[in-house]
Image 1: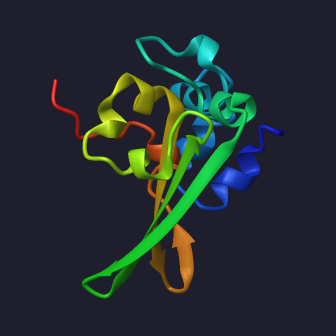
Image 2: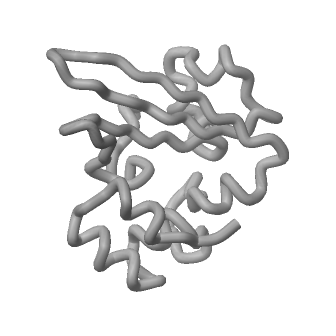
Length: 129
């Protein structure tokens, strides 16, 4: 599996993200591709999730709110998580949910899907602490 930053940036036109992805020690690059340079608990690069799970599950959903189309892609280890469990309230805040899932939100504007952040980078899950 390639670490294709150009493909990801087709959906993200943020100049800061473009610059960050050119540095393989930046927080964003590590978040996406290299668990070794991520600090903290339950940290796993998105690449590692995709490359190591025995059965990658992908669930796509969309909704329209106030005339705008929004999309959500959920990526998860289907060998560890059932479709039902994935959407159980609070599951994404569990250790299992944090280690074995990734999500990516999109919005459609002018007929094109885009995102404000790659795979929820720097977006906190709404978990109670």
